[in-house]
Amino acid sequence: MALSNSERQAAFRKRKAATHKKLELLIPAHELAIFQVKAKELGITQAELFSQFIQSNTNLYKQDEKLPDNKILLADNDSLHKDLSILTKLNKQLKNEIAELKGLGDTAKKAAKKGREKYPYDNHSLDEDIVEWRKSNGKKTSIKSTKLLADLKRPAKKALGLGNGKCTDKQNRAIFEWIKENKQ
Image (cartoon, rainbow, N blue to C red; front, side, top):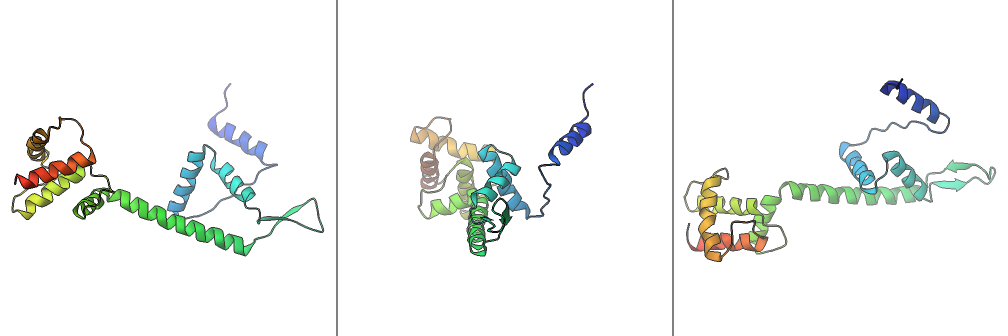
């Protein structure tokens, strides 16, 4: 007869009791998410990633002179502070990247207005620019007016020789310029 989930879990804990100890940590949710993503990217468990981190930090373990066969944990404060500093900087960069990804439409719009081609100019960014441009000219338009937006883009695509398929960033910018020039 097959074991239930709880029976399998109990057997697992019993097997591991001699060689493993449970570690419970309360860390900020975003840091846990980063840790989980890193483990998934590497294709290993979170426990394995934690072990690799501990083992790769050569300053964490030092041989005790009195007990040459035993390793004792010595916290090397300089190394830990450097690691913390690096992780803090990486965390800040990730937060900025996440914020940028969440507001990508707005970022693309701002970049396009400044003439920078660095950011993607997808169909949604094009629609946002059309709506804003029409509102600045006193014409009521909503981002939800998909039929109107499609009707505005259709003659621009035709005039520019573009098909009905997906457009590149450069083509979307050209569509917007054509709409502005022809006062659609």
